[in-house]
Image (tube, one colour):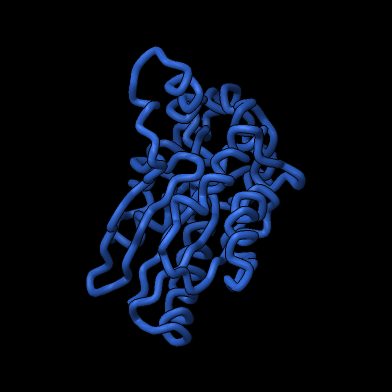
Length: 230
């Protein structure tokens, strides 16, 4: 089967502000996220991509823009099923504030039971994104062969759900994964599926304590594990 490169969009103004953007239109990459997007062509240099598939939200389109500009012949497809989770009434609220909501305890410990008020359940999100990924993987194999490599740019919770599914893990364990903005995760849907790489940003500076890079990526991810964190 083909190899899938799962790309999380670059850091956004909402990530930097500690807000849960959800499906809010017009959420753009911040300056750091734009730099992450600009670095993507070099990171993927030499990799023969068969296609790029992405969420319809602006932040994913902006993340892919430099790559598509450098590879004008690369087919790009918008896939509605890999849009961000619909967080309903939680959308655009501060993650710090959401961390105190009773529902957050369910999101942390039993996400398969979490339903966002006026929005979507994490179980429904999991079902649609995994269906989309498997459909596209089969399509890429049929059109480009078993050795093809393809890219999907989507959102943090979606990537966590896809990885958990590929590894045969229950959705309730998906909070154990933390893909950073602009990170690349590689999967191969063989028998069994294999996780080849997880959350690769090419930058280990965040692990050096008490530095600007460490503070930059900390955000509210640990206290409020929705949206993938900053």
